[in-house]
Length: 251
Ligand code: BTN
Image (cartoon, rainbow, N blue to C red; front, side):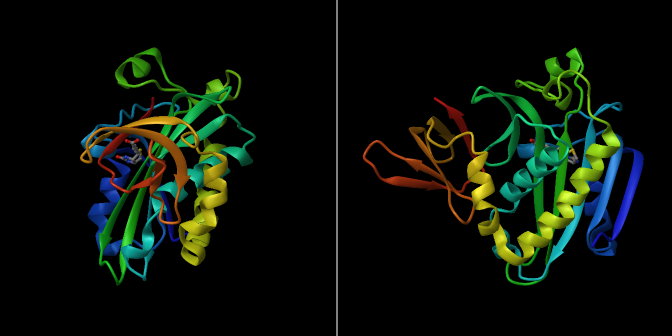
């Protein structure tokens, strides 16, 4: 169950705040901020976090079996975000590996609705903690669209123009996190595979991958029980990608 829930007006970053607390944070702490002055995205990017309508939330969850058992956690969080949207009656979101939440129209990926940043600390085999940061766009201004550096979308657009009530979105997300992380503790990512596959934007799509593994093309063939992306190569072999250091786009 939930240990602590805090709402702040301003923080540098909700994830940094939980990191600073370290061992003093109670298990399953959730921190929200109205605005972040140094919101962080994946790969050292910044996450623009003006006050207003968007949601910035981080959750600290401890696990006792070590972070080796946490593979797939960030993908499971994507599924959890979609479950929350589903409860709110908001359709039209899907997942792009490893953990972008995108709008989707007519099967085609649209802009990014939100981002997930999972940071692990502790031991490989022993006690460890995950700090799970989630940013969700409820309503973007033209300036935010411009600064985002990539196509972005918001829940208001999915909901037909009016942004959903932010407290309701926060509550749905927190409930989905409590239930989903309990499920992850029991079943690992295996328990999320079916839901992930239902929302997997890359499955069956021609892909172009680039990064530390070089550049190559293939067809998206789903994810495995550890959350690795599977890519079918021209010769029929399946290449398993678990490096976070890779960029995937539909070719
Ligand atoms: C991404 O690059 O897609 C991940 C973005 C994660 C943003 C969220 S907002 C709440 C939490 N605090 C941060 O500083 N980052 C995450």
